[in-house]
Length: 74
Image 1 (spheres, rainbow, N blue to C red):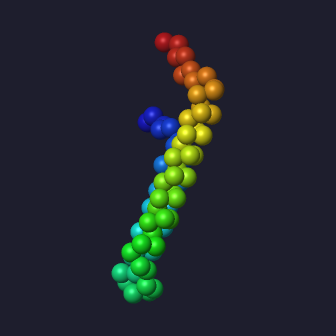
Image 2 (cartoon, helix red, strand yellow):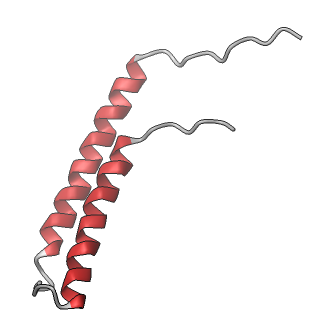
């Protein structure tokens, strides 16, 4: 199985969107009251942070040469 490339920008976006979902789920379950507009800055900030992390990751990976796969002698 081929390993996929780790993308920390997607991880950051997933964490922020998961927390936003938990906040709305808590509101739906009646655990607390959440106005509809509270999550918008949180999601927007999380997506901006994820974009910045993805840009930084791309810049760091572009500076390094791509690793070559090991040679197989047949």
